[in-house]
Picture: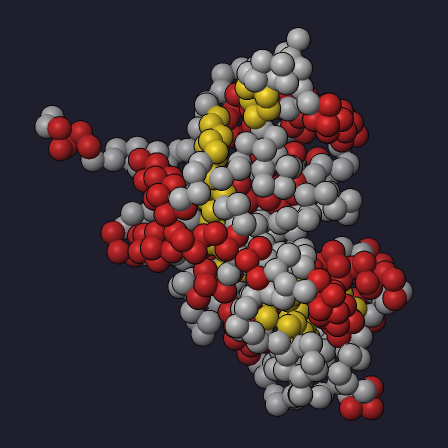
Length: 471
């Protein structure tokens, strides 16, 4: 064959088109294999002089693997990578600081303190045949690096290819790649890609340039129509994502991240995945998962329901339903516990796009005592976010909640917004103001009292000095 014919990608044979029927593949893994991989993630060769701080981290990680109850974000990621490597999938991750991790959480490649020699845990699993694992620290040139990794995902669809921004908003210098290729490549050229973009996101008072991955931009580029009538049937989620141009995630548990990564490869089609990855959740004591959430017969959850067993069991007593996404979930739960509230349920949308209409409908059915509004004024069904109102997921999720209520229950839902006021800048650089805003968001979401009186039935529309209009 000619050189030109040899260039044509043949590794894509067997992958299906958006209109073809695809199969569902499990993403859970045998728990004993997870333990074995976990042990190798803590092993260094004899004579290797690891940093003292890393030795403590490795000891703690080994304890977590042995107990199997407190697997953190970085360990769950490494377990996902390790299982894919053993299944014959090449895994590569690039970005400004991916070997260590921007937040010193990953440490997938470490150095001997005496010789400077590298040791890569995932390249040395010694559990049988495995594919190669590559972690490369790149230059601060997002446009070039994202373009290279996108091309790699085109050429090798069996590889899990990830690019991680140092902070999420650094993706803006690769926007040409996002707009022209990643979001629209399949629509333009029938060219699928499984590229994963990890974009650290979360409001912690760090200022305008280190808070937001601009998730609203990725949601605006999502092609699922807010007015398409969902069928709510079994398999809807799989068919929906197969037709969509990509997936946008804001995950809240290590186990769900584990499944999201494995789901990328355990499909007979490929879709880009944008993850608003965490910053402070890496070390948050509450943000852990048991190994049992990653074992056989477990899978990715597009939505996670109320996690308090008492509130979940007494759902008929819930009169306030809060939907959110990402790390603000843990802040809402902590404040709810501090206030001793049992009438408020908190739900996380793990996959924002394409929107999980069917799962949201199930939640609304369960909490049917919650006031959905009168068609003009909002009730007690809330979207809570930490981003300003003109940013974050609000503009995307609002009409889709309305569609769910209209098509699922013939209800005229008015969703209540709780979050920061619309702003030009993503975040304040003044820590005191950041904390005041965050406290107001939590209190308003749970109690509805920062800018409204109980006798007004929480229907005040004017914004406070900190929060945006509620509809």
